[in-house]
Length: 372
Ligand SMILES: C[S@@+](CC[C@H](N)C(=O)[O-])C[C@H]1O[C@@H](n2cnc3c(N)ncnc32)[C@H](O)[C@@H]1O
Ligand code: SF4
Ligand code: SF4
Image (cartoon, rainbow, N blue to C red; front, side, top):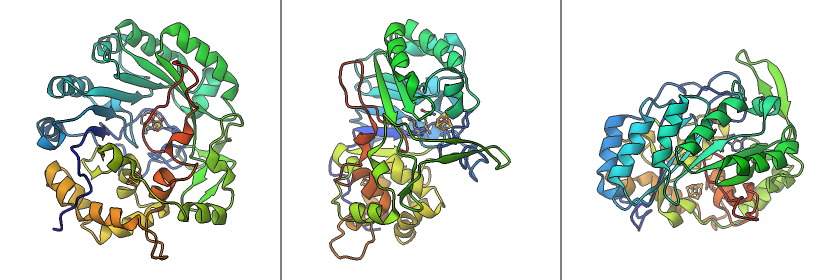
């Protein structure tokens, strides 16, 4: 196996997907087809505690500064031992802060109160996905109720935990932003952030759609979502596939994962530089074909699998990481780099940070999370 110099510094950030299970049916979440039928193979896997135990003592992660519990396909609180995972992380990585993204809709109020004790450090944070109230909230967080989430967040805050209110803005809920921000202060959230979704951009066609159809379990259209007007993602200007390709193809890439020395590990134990590439490594959608091509000829998914390989072997021996890095130099004129790297880390105005409202005060700060 050819060695890879992808990471020249120790890993300081680990984004882990504790599970690919969830009790909600958010239409733009990758776990279901537009909120309808589950994607094949999803919804069955909790991260192995045995593999987790090996990560805790791994030399590759001994300098960890941030553990992010989130993922692409599930909600961390569905992992039956999430609190144990957090307790172990606190004892093995005492210097690391913990960030947890959740819909906050299950577990008892006492469980949330107790969880508060792990989130008291300056950089510890639970990010509650609270996209408004009442019917507006449940239109995206299908199957959930905002009252149930608020009760749990309040209990967590009473237990001393630090948290952020993350508001995913759409046309149907953006009128509630001001009220939500006010309430977040009143309830004791540390900060409030509006997330402008990028997911009206379809990677399969490289174009922005102004309407997104929502399906039920049987695949019938039951609703449609429209982008927020006030909190519109800059990608919305890329209405034609041609303009998107032209702008994205011309950009240079600065890899966030390399720069930050961060890695992503999915619930199935597959290692990738980031959640965006991690999502495509495990996907058979047409939008992931370019990435899959590189993967197929450089070791395949199996070569990134924890359990059969140690994390050190993957980080320093992976042919895939080397090939991915080489693909970013697009000067040959033959486009071979994955579009996902252009969208997320291209040096243009559509990248990762553009989805968050600029911080205007201490009560508004950018959040990082799973697939964009
Ligand atoms: C699969 S979720 C896992 C965490 C948790 N279940 C949640 O929904 O926050 C990963 C990330 O997807 C993000 N997400 C969900 N729907 C989104 C949307 N329409 N646009 C942008 N981000 C979205 C959330 O911010 C979340 O942090
Ligand atoms: S976005 Fe989060 S809460 Fe919604 S279905 Fe996906 S994992 Fe569940
Ligand atoms: S999308 Fe590509 S360039 Fe960006 S962090 Fe991931 S691997 Fe690096």
